[in-house]
Image 1 (tube, one colour):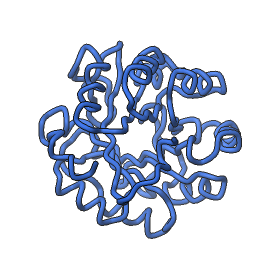
Image 2 (image 1 turned 90 degrees about the horizontal axis):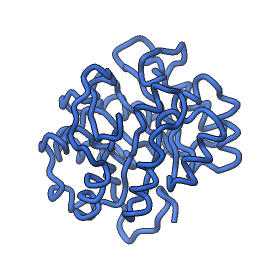
Image 3 (image 1 turned 120 degrees about the horizontal axis):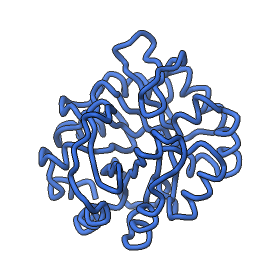
Length: 254
């Protein structure tokens, strides 16, 4: 079964915990700044198993070493989690070539998210869409909506492009994208609540889009608000690791 297209008796917003990897460890950053790294676990597999034990079905695994190196690095951790849990893994970070993509899928990723590649090498990303389809290739659209035009950030959010968010998403929808993970980088790791206006704007302009919200999610109320907006999924990071949201609080979404 595909990560995004399972049949259910009840439609609900998917809850997707994030596991970010640096040096083989589970970490969180603030606003994508590597200098703010905080280690939460020496063993990402243990973290993944704790999610699985709580009934979580999905995980967003980010290779931050790969994002900096500009090629896949932590595929062995992907392989471990894929082979030793039943979690459906979306993998991102450092995917720049067909070989990177091949390694990710061979290591157990159900889907991959491409952000920087969609900005810097759109022909390669379009080729991935054509080959694997819009349910396996997810568009990462990360931005700071407080800046004019909400321009797309890339390369681990260290660089900003000239591409504006809404036209960027629309262009890729026309090329076959069905799912978008959008992160407000000004909110990431801040525990200040998500950018509801941003996500509402995206959905207003792209009514059939399956939008996954990321950045700033702090409480169950935030999740309810995102679900009410029509988001298909929500990625939770620091709120889980800091205990603002407990795994048992998420049972109603399962």
